[in-house]
Length: 506
Image 1 (cartoon, rainbow, N blue to C red):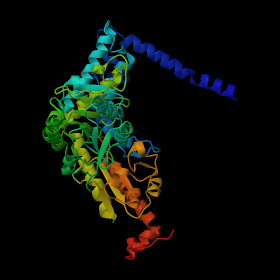
Image 2 (image 1 turned 90 degrees about the vertical axis):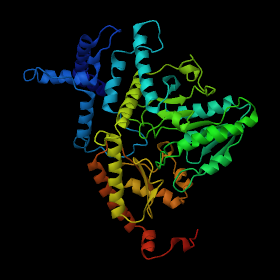
Image 3 (image 1 turned 180 degrees about the vertical axis):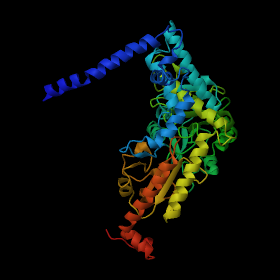
Image 4 (image 1 turned 90 degrees about the horizontal axis):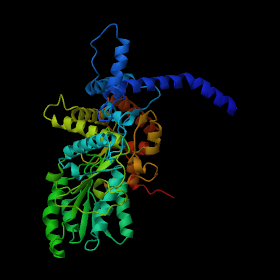
């Protein structure tokens, strides 16, 4: 049986293999040039143009290359109509986003033709990839109004969070041993803080208000002369609440700096770190205006490739941190390792597109993401809440519109998710979805276990369509009504019984 399968596999794929080899040879003949000059023929746009010219050679001799804008338009227009019947609708944009086709188009040459090591300084292959990686770094820096030298490439926001929190805490541990964060941070921030507690550091976990925001007076009261770093997420990944980042930064530059003087001249103020993975490219961020000293970023939350992120580390006044990865001294010695050029280019292109989009904020016809996502968020929320009663919005109504967290009371959340297999939703962070425990973020808002278990997060993104939102709303309404009909608790509530007054046995 094994022999037969192998023989069938080889003979069955031989024509495809031969075609691929022929295509590769043709590509090399057309696209390979001196490493000192770029080869645009290796991109998606030009490959599409080549196919178009072959198909229409007798009809149109003036065919033009497909621009990245055209690629994007085709992706948007075909998103619903070309969806395979067995593919569920994706509404989990806080978990990850699809790679924008324009980003992929920018990346492909660095897999096919420009594949040099960007740290090879002795030949053209290294020079061209170094230039491309630095251009990507420039685009990321421009998005957050930073100096490109302050952007350190990492593998993602999890590594950036670890590097920032552990790095600062350990570097300044001789004088400072106190850290402040919130109870609703991403798990990697909370686990980093717990690891530092085991090393002897003191950590204050600030509670949040019912809307998910911290109380600034509580933060001020928690500050000490020995506070080395304060870590507060910009946009929460489960409820979309936007923290008062600018106010926090101002407090640390003024009151925090005054406290630090008690430890002697030259002692730095508490550094401000924020996890900006869910905020980057979605809301305006100016690290200088907000007083941010370190910020974690992730490419795949921004329609870029997975596997790369960055950490903004301020240079003036300088933020010192102890590296968690040792090696060749790349990235200012803070994060050794070879930069993945294609990923850096993709991250940079995603940042460039986001900045271009946000720069057009005065013209809603051009500002696709924010206007589009806000309209779809309102459409979804109004549709569901007008047809289903006893639905709670978790978090701040003025938060990021692309992240909507709703509680459907008197329904078991697991049953709700099981009945929605044709829709990709989440009941919390993707990094904790394997746990059966209710979301700690929702518990921090004051929700009990029952309501926390009955909550769903809707993540709306750049490629979500109105048809998808309408389908999801109809499905949600039908499933919620059906599950409530089967629920004895719902029947008791309809009869006017206060469930809190019942003494449950067992």
